[in-house]
Length: 132
Image 1 (tube, rainbow, N blue to C red):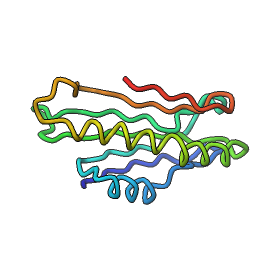
Image 2 (image 1 turned 90 degrees about the vertical axis):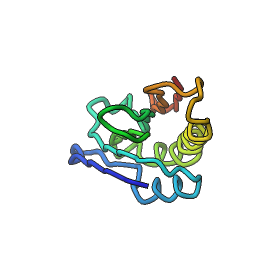
Image 3 (image 1 turned 60 degrees about the vertical axis):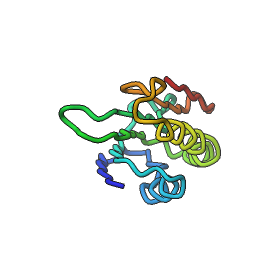
């Protein structure tokens, strides 16, 4: 599995909840072998935080292989425990299931579209997940 990681400096009073090594281990154990580009972003809206945003991209003329583009944002210190719990118990398991469904499809599957998306957000203390 080819990994690229970009990590911005976290804003004051915030921290990142997702650990790259933990995500790598979970994806490896789940059999996800395609390329992953992981980006950490500093949140500008502490009450509405994207814990995980994942796009699936099909091979194209510029990049000849399939890949997942995952981003995560920092959370305010006071929301760190809640965010970590929701990430580990709900968001990551749902993400893995979504990713496995995509990579299980045959190469010519009409179920797999360009730029499919999974999003898990922490909004006012509640987890919201959307799949496109």
